[in-house]
Length: 313
Image (cartoon, rainbow, N blue to C red; front, side, top):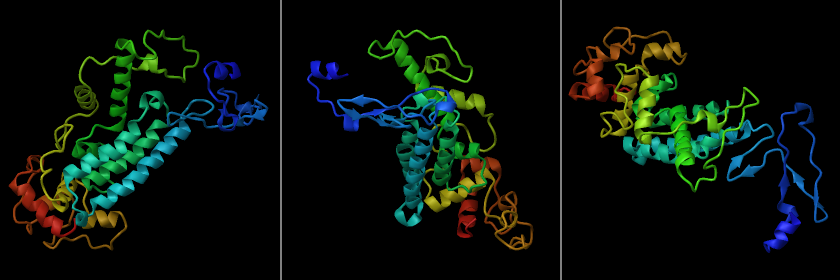
């Protein structure tokens, strides 16, 4: 290394140089490398960082996934501030901010660590992101959150991003791995980027939508699309209530008792038991609506959502 630095007129700095050994021998996990350079012992680190990607001894990327999750959670706190109606929250603003702040952080360098079994931990924070964007409650099924937010699930977005990098590796001569031959697999637990990623033959938008449609059967909630469903022009309080009605999980008295937030009275003002299905058929609302009305977000659905929005459902 000294000769290389001298030949290229570089100035070495042993104080900032770190060393790490990558291996799978757990019995040697605590052993440190003792390497001297220019009379100084180099610092041994268990988690070196290269281009903002945290590596570890076994290349499981557990530490990197943990750090990424914490970054997304910190940005979710900013998104929660924006979700207050006094800050002028709008559905399109919330969705754009969530994608720019949270999803971009989640997808950085994901072709490197997307095959890690710890990658799913980051998806938990993104579930919270979509929950904030849509205004839905925590018991709402996660697949409904992404449908209402108009954002493909993290696993699909991560897979397509990896396929984009694979396409570049195959076609772009400037890519560092262009023409790289696949090495023989020694461990079954390892899922190499070269073996798992596939070349894209369509646009990333179409690829995400197709994979999403293949994994999720169409249901009554809404159509699968990568944009806000109908009603994105509505004010934030009304949009939030409308999404809760679409998801079928709202702050009804029956649910509040189930979640142990209220007493034993689950009766609506009309005298019937207040459940999620009852919200669409209550005699106190100005007009009744169906699931089809909620999908279309027509006048009936908006009037019902406006009524229950005043009751903080």
